[in-house]
Image (tube, rainbow, N blue to C red; front, side, top):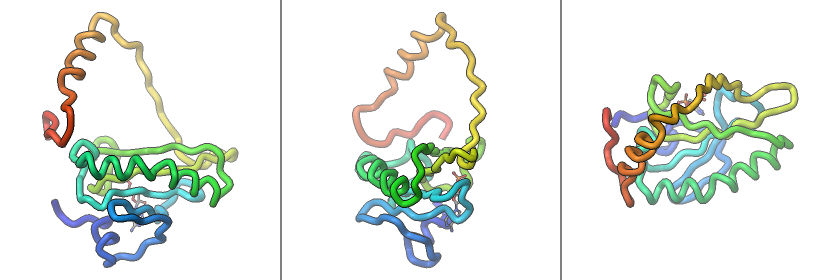
Length: 148
Ligand code: AMP
């Protein structure tokens, strides 16, 4: 995996406005915030997309994400927020290192805007689909997803 800007931040080659750090996780302010307090939480493990992340790093991120969210809310006065996690260029991922956006949403509308073109679940296909996904859930570890 080629070095990303986040790897350079982790290596101390590029500065950041750090808000949290432990042995497996770093959080810092987004340099182009969608709203006041927009923060990125990244595992130190250089996984490109979430499906490639180890259980240990996933656990470490999951353990501190709500704590960092609470700090963002307290530090900004925001009440509402979105967590955004993009994977793949077609899904708007620009930096190829797993990251979670914490994006405060304010009464003036600043924050994440979402298009949500929902359709109705096809009941004829739903159970076969659920079964196919159920059968693909691995007990632990990273298993390469189809098409990767
Ligand atoms: P994504 O589209 O999910 O890959 O988002 C990548 C995010 O990283 C964007 O919101 C960028 O503004 C942010 N970003 C890129 N470079 C830096 C940097 N050096 N410091 C902080 N945030 C950055």
